[in-house]
Image 1 (cartoon, one colour):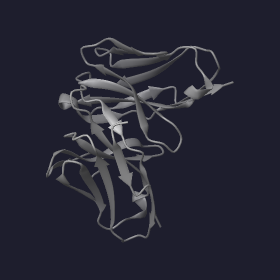
Image 2: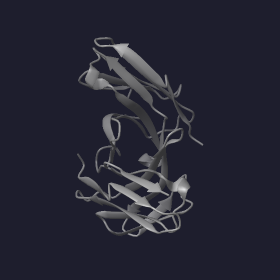
Image 3: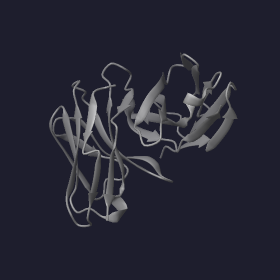
Image 4: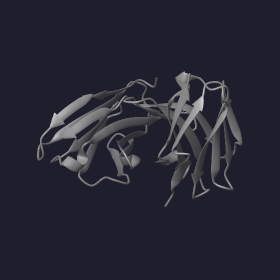
Length: 112
Length: 113
């Protein structure tokens, strides 16, 4: 059974810092990996999707990497801003893109 | 925004009553999902659908049923609500031709007293 963990559970940084969020999964037979952000009381917003054949994806200040063989992904946020404060979740899918399994999330606070 | 709406957005009900939550999408996506999100458990899949009248169980399907009679609507029913089903329920779709990227609706907060 696929299990997804995220470290750290919570993180507080001053504005302007670069930071890394970690996601680990136990079964390397994934179809893709997706990063989301969730603001309090809101739904999930897709940030980046990495196909299993890819090593990384970039969108603005965000860069996500994938090492499928070691079961790890990282989300790098450059020059963090208070507006980045949210919970960040990763999810992996198997079976041709279905059966998504989510990690518990990392709660990020960026202090002005 | 993948054109996903959920109704109702908030609901308070009593133990033993039936409850139906609706997910509506406007972009003709084939796959639709129902999740629940709880502190300490994260997001867990309840049921999903891969087409009209085609559904399958997820990790936490006990106590829930679903129906999909039209492509655009996916209904989640709690036949007899229990307090353990108090949760936030999210509907999601996977986008066609986007390597199965998932998009979520705004959620329904359900409280069972």
